[in-house]
Image (cartoon, rainbow, N blue to C red; front, side, top):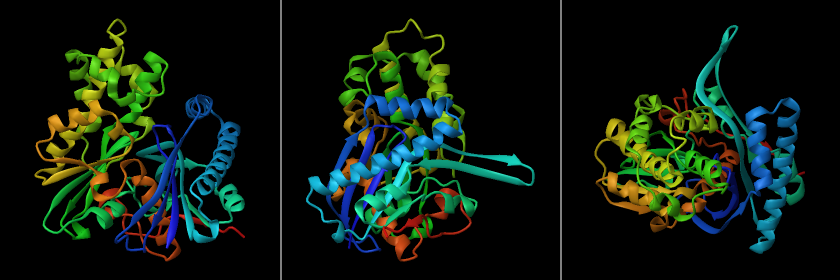
Amino acid sequence: MKAIGMMSGTSLDGITAALVETGVSGKNLKVLAYKTYPYTKRVQKLILDTIASGGVREVSFLNFFIGKLYAETAKKFLKEFSISPSDVKVIGMHGQTVFHTADKKRFGQFSLSHTLQIGEPAFVAAETGVTVVSNFRAKDIAFSGQGAPLIPMFDFLVFARKNKRIAVQNLGGIGNVTVLSGTDIGSVFAFDTGPCNMVLDGATRLLYGKSYDRNGAIAHSGKVIDELFNKLAKTPYLKKRPPKSAGRAEFGDAFLKETLKGFENARKKDIIATLNKFVAFTIFDAYKRFVGKLDYAVLSGGGVFNKTLVDNIKEYIEVPVYLSDKFNIPAEAKESAAFALYALRTLYKLPSNVKKATGASKETVLGVITYAK
């Protein structure tokens, strides 16, 4: 079966679409085509402004705007790669995360985690003629989970190897790791390791007016500021035990501005270099605290294109480090491919969360189905 996954992460770089061919088991999954369609600076600003200060009216508009943008992107993707909608069983649409926190809020008799991924799926279903599955995280939260990380089921189905202990590390807006110990799903656990592209891109926008540090060139040209690095290394989230997840509430612009207080006169490139090193440190620190011995690590996500970040990670981790491309899963497309697979699993009423990763009370079928007709 063929399915499309569409994902826009917390780094706000754009919408990545991936066409996969697979069964619901994920065995021998093939990524047939993929592409990232970047957000314009104007769209990035709209999202960031809404996250920072939007009310109900602004969030409502953004929800429908992102849905329309997803629909236009889906049509471009279908046309560009000569994909007939009739050949696509389903589209898995993650949407744009505008809020996520694992912390529970109490009101009256209820205490709830909450998360919000926006992008009205009706536009995608209506304009492509393909059934859409969206809102993947809510069901996990309904079973007392954190709604994140959700990629561990995909990692297990695709990357698990007999007698191998593997860390599958995603370098997205937030870093997250899935730890695989052989082929027993009961041993799988995962958690968010901490900030990644969210702070790197945020600092690059703040200091240079650029969307991101291309290839990590700015970081490579700078030197680590020890005082700033030591301050960052004391970030409380790093000591928090899994299951744990994070988002802009923890590592958005407010975190960045608070972190950089007192370093206004530091060289900009040195700040970027320090943050880059810190992100690599959070991964190393997480492995040391909570993971232990590994045979190798697999990297994916947009951060793999930051050469300085990958080099820093390799310096810290004393095991072989590979890109997911080595296992026929393009690093850029992995999360989109995951939601394509999950959409298929939803149609066949199969679970896609891993309760040990999210803290949910059970594995469950994820997502809401929007039919094309």
